[in-house]
Length: 347
Image (cartoon, rainbow, N blue to C red):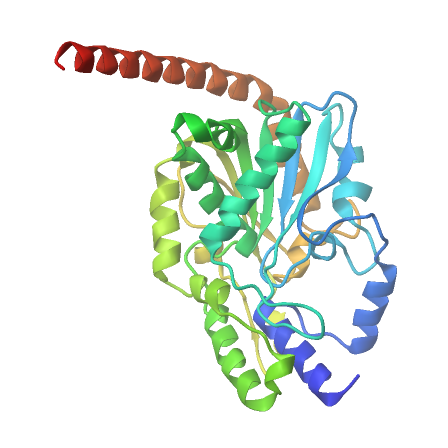
């Protein structure tokens, strides 16, 4: 590995909040990661029970990956290797979602130039299309989101909720069908580490050849404390959050940045006071809190218990949501017909 590549790897670790580890440890983790045919982008199904009653969708965070984000150092990819066995009689379809959340680019990779809104639209479209193909548009959805992934899920639900035009009602199905969200270290109020990311970008531009660096700051900028993007997303989400069951998990171990140790997302940002939400800490770093080596890993039992409860309770609630949605659509059609009739009489 060249000095430039080593420097890039180190900076990328800071920007994503990854705990700094030795290259030997990184190589061991990478070699232990099995190939499950997961696509880097869009949806990949990793498990499907017979006649599933719920869709569980995992969404990674900044500089994340739809498989590696959820894979522990011992190679356990828990959405496939642990979760299905611990859901009891719940029949679940489990999917991971991938998108370009790269802040730093090296080699053939490309940094993300999309804004959160663009990623949210793509998530809604991909999820709706996949569920429509599988005749599952009314099946309940539960999201498990790490870090930036939680912001993306919130923005996607706000976007889906606003789609009331007859030509986009299919995309509204994501909002209607979502029952619960498990947030893992999501910076709802922003994170100071995002400012570190901007600083490191400037350092990289000064120290590395331009051809080795293709960084766009949109995603990192959006995660700054009190950013306008976060505030707008939070305002939109507050109007619809009562519809969802929410669990907020925060990291309880600081991340080692080499010269200092700090929480990537502190508790006030990861676990704001929301009515009806469930709160818990996970004894792990920001990166480690979404990687479970076994059923005994800190936080695993709490996360899975909530997933199981959500999955059991979701079908009845989502069926009621759809009943209300059909009534709303029928009322809209009658109102439109009435308005057209009145317009014709006064022409």
